[in-house]
Image 1: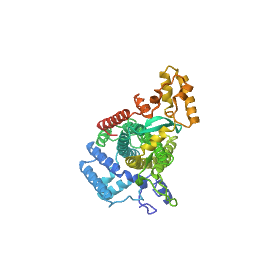
Image 2 (image 1 turned 180 degrees about the vertical axis):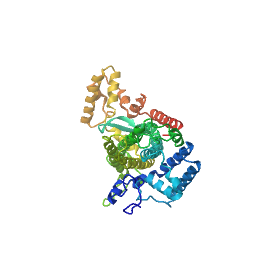
Image 3 (image 1 turned 135 degrees about the vertical axis):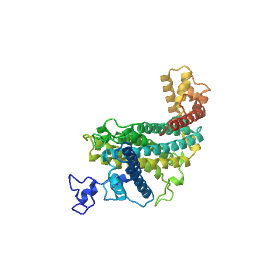
Image 4 (image 1 turned 90 degrees about the vertical axis):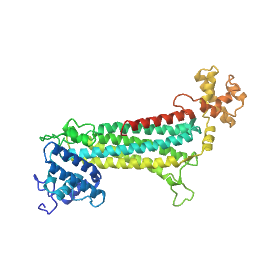
Length: 471
């Protein structure tokens, strides 16, 4: 005990460790970094093995350390051992518990490492796991989107620009736009993981160590692809956190856009889809209400993840090398973002799997917005008009339809010819909605065949990503 009868600090020596109680709480991170206990113990097991392999500690000491760490892991997993709030962080907690169990051998574990490289190691291992989990969850969501797109591959709906009805597409095509967005998210996570999966252990506080260590052994044991090549960079780098947070923010941006459309489509004004009761709520006063709360929450939580990203960018922007205590602020932001994204992706998968589409309502909307006007212009181009003249003629024809209170499909031929004498009886084939959709055969277009090709391509990329390793 120190002079204030508080538990000893691991760093006592230069000072007596007698910090103020409020300062202890302010300084402590064990309340949120304890979630890395598995990574901390795994890293310590590998470190003990390296120390023994290099002759820095004896094999017997390493065995005792590794056995003690295994017991600590088992007790935490079983709920028999809880985080001690008196410990500053998960690293000090594990080391203190190990020393209490096996004695002086436990005090040798921290040889040739610092908390600076230890926390960077734990965080990289933890976020590597989180990236893999989120990537796997995204793949399940993409699969759900593809299945729904397959079901509605030929269902005509109006495509929108400026939230105004624009051109005919299929509901399957609209859904597949989100599948491609989410697939890019998987790719970004995979790229991030490559830069994340580099081991900092052995960089120590900032200047390496005088002990004859084997950094490659620890890196390979823990599944890393290599080691940080500059010891100062190894302990001061949090690019991997910022990059992951950026990727998570983009995921949330995509989910938020998807949520916005689900919310709009489920209104009576659109009536395109119905969300399952399992993903909606009611009103406390209006019994008729069915509110898309889960979609709205996902949309709202996007701002939370954006905040996590900007918080860490702000923390890191002015820090001198190497480690600074400011960097303790990395974990709460990145852990919160990971947890938020995982919950949102899970909810989205359920919403997509259980939602149903009202194809008749989509068809009615498609029929009422002159979304075949571009096809009329293209028809007139085929009759010999330059596109700009055809465009103006089609626009005047739409204005005439609005005056007559009819659609392009119902406008009499003489009215077509009053605007453009080149129009013939085949104009009705040109503006037929089903025909308009079928003719959009350019690669990546909205036809049912194109949607099925997109689904096959997305699934092929997902399969390839699985075969090529993590994420």
